[in-house]
Image 1 (cartoon, rainbow, N blue to C red):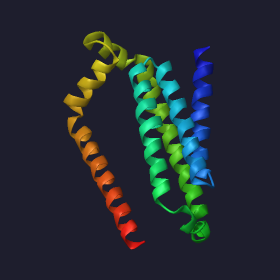
Image 2 (image 1 turned 90 degrees about the vertical axis):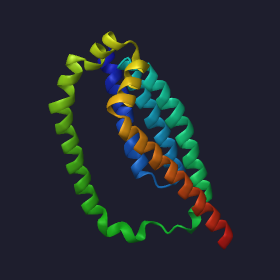
Image 3 (image 1 turned 90 degrees about the horizontal axis):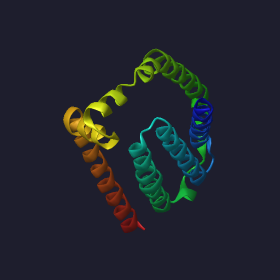
Image 4 (image 1 turned 60 degrees about the vertical axis):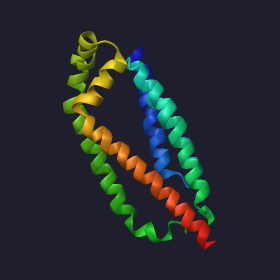
Length: 172
């Protein structure tokens, strides 16, 4: 039964992610992104990673989506030209998408499925404690540099968005 739920949630995540990319209106893309985040959170729950599921909903489906909505409100969407100048790149984009999707499938089949069968996270949980303790130890021991780099990149992007918004208001 759990395999059926896994297939349903993963199918919903993939279809919703495709709809994010294929949406004509940016608000529709954001709404499909919410569906993608929630189905990913459901997959985390099925993998017994409740902490990651809660973070997925609170941070991504909450804070990041609100950030996207504010960015959409700051940018005047009506002034943006429709995708008239991107038509000649569609064929290339479709082929690159197929190639990347095939590569992703190969990686999943060769690498992640045997790891899921072994259950390395379950072994680490038994040794170190609960879900959040394992994530905390990984983040602040093995992955402290990438963790800090991501926080700096997010800070720079927020400062850049504020500077762009202020400059746009001054021009108007």
